[in-house]
Image (cartoon, one colour):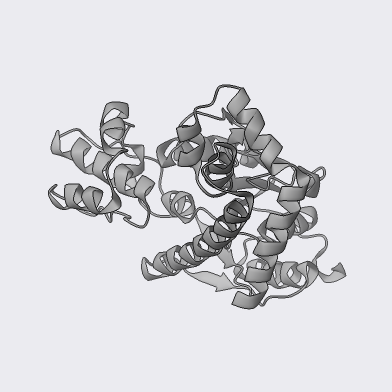
Length: 313
């Protein structure tokens, strides 16, 4: 890594994205060490306090690297893209004030896209009453609800999951009221890098990591959240590790079923993440896909690229 030492940051954003278990955090930390960087998480579940093992916060990986938007709300709360958008800009301002290089790292494509492209609809407020009425509906019923609403100009609803369908309906309903959509600051200049390990490598990493999380106390973590009074349906809403562990603890799944189904759903989730990243490319965001390999090699490739673009000196 000697060839990448000594670079200094400027204000353009570096974005590192990829599916779950692809090594994003380790790469972001390695890069940050060499360019005086600070990391802004783009993970929709790492914002929650007490949800550590299931979200893979891996705090030990960061060492002394500054990081933001992890553990900022209590488990049980509802966090959404509009809040992320505001929290991101606050974190970015703090990092820039320190003269450090901002690095966004995460796998929640919707959050990343909201800060990189004009996404005025991200500031539409949450309608708790509407959400409660929509929660019991099936995905097909939600799609029918959305189809019956006028779609605002320039709004591209994401219908890939139930949560995103509900948010899309919420935005569409808000716009039918004639409310003014708040405008935010212009999109942040950024250079995007993607991690896309071969499918067999990704699948092996996901399964191995799930085994590690179970051994590290995932079940006890979820049991503790339930004992704190967080409703089971709220943990189910958070999905994946929290959904299936809760169902196991409630006796709705046997242990073998729980592990098998969770493992399968994480693989499907990774595939959906890759699909969303490809959508981002179709929407005009240029992602430089790094050659899969040792973290040091990928960090060298990344920094050489941003140095050539003038993002770092």
